[in-house]
Length: 264
Image (cartoon, rainbow, N blue to C red):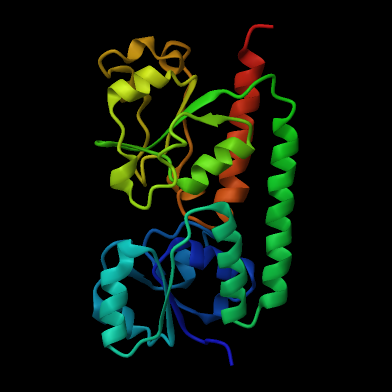
């Protein structure tokens, strides 16, 4: 018997369940949910990402709570103490995203639908790799997940940059388990000389002028050439299908546009 009332503390669980046609089993969603847009009108918002009131989650009477990573460990602990079953995903790469889709599908009796979704996502990844092959070379990319302190891109973001044909200048940090290990200094960015800077400030609007004003950054090729771009965090920083469909598509377009601007 599959679960009937699922509380989703993470946005990728919401988008996945809708994509599988299992939205009827969603009892509550994260307040940060963006996709699909109708979820915000149809489902009660029961938590933030790293915080939430226990009673608000319990009010929707979940028979399962879906959470993500150690960042939601305290909420998971409190729910377990209340006798609630909790499944915490902890993936940080593309393989983990595809695995999450399959596992979530199995939990709600939608294994076949999940397999079709995984096949579609895999095809999208293959198409992006094929498109990247036509780039004259890989642009050096600095992806900024936060600005104070400066945090470079997490694992699946770094992978997507590579699939789209770019070269993440901080790929050595991307596999780190926590954000603290991905904090970078201004001097490191200057030294690695990215040709494209992508800002995705975790729900906050990216401000290119703030980047341009950083001391010494006028020498950074991306700043010099005005290659400062935004991908909204909802499109790439949640480890679900949207990162592959929306995020990867935008990366592909950014790199193709960059290539077209390069001298012959």
